[in-house]
Length: 82
Image (cartoon, rainbow, N blue to C red; front, top):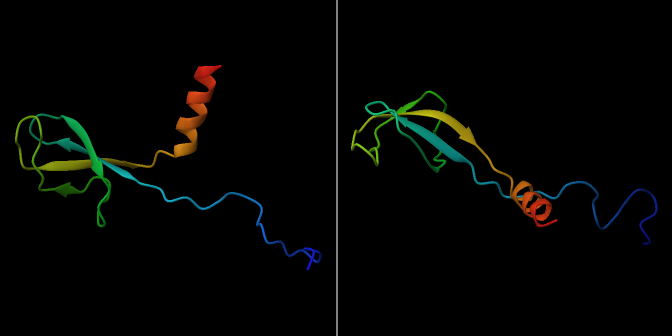
């Protein structure tokens, strides 16, 4: 078939990408913020028992969960190169 009738072998639009979210944690002892890969069950304002890399405290609060899209980084690099 030649693709007539609205059927195409190559779908238009955005391709599905695998995104890697990051969880941002704030130490409840020293207020240091760091990040780690997202774990299932993470939610904003949830408290977790993880060690702070700075002070060794064992309680941290999730302050954000973000995804950085790879395309954005590549576009920035291209713009900076010009």
